[in-house]
Image 1 (spheres, chains in turn red, orange):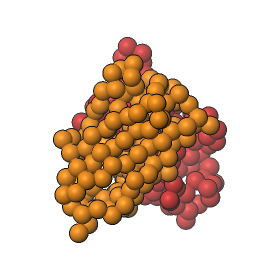
Image 2 (cartoon, each protein chain N blue to C red):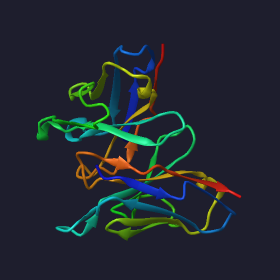
Image 3 (spheres, rainbow over the protein chains, first blue to last red):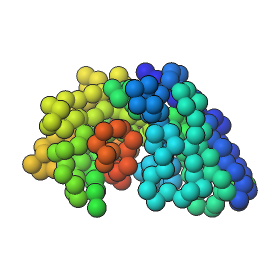
Length: 114
Length: 122
């Protein structure tokens, strides 16, 4: 199975600061035939199911604020929150869907306000 | 609006069985694969399996951690997907979510149910 490793485990930032969350896959999730990275990002708030933020590594889901952006390719990916808002307090997960017989998630990164 | 609602969770003893249901509305259920993801208390997300649509034979895939114990099925006429869990272990304690991808061709899940809690304990 493809192992997804996120860093850091948690981060605490002030309102308005930039948050950067990293996700590394144990093998490339870039499909060469269509040049797409099979990588998604989710946000999960307490007591709620996950919410899809980003897919294809950098495509923002409809309705997601543009302060959220995804980047990276191959094995290294980043979710950036350009200006942290109070409502962004949550746990963020990356997920690969390259191997669609064994989907895997990262361990999560908890984002808090300092 | 697409919606998924899980039910059937509860407290069960180790070694026993439980069946969860995922009732869909707001979309043509039979056209989509349905996946299940679980989350142990205070832990991360774990994909446990999916069942493809009729067009793909309603075939199933499972995570190694549940293969041979869990079985996915679906009744497209009732808009319900099922997760049959046998030989339950304490480590199966989790919130169980059903989910799907509305694009129908990848597994980035944009619709989720609210989840149902399964507690395995003696």
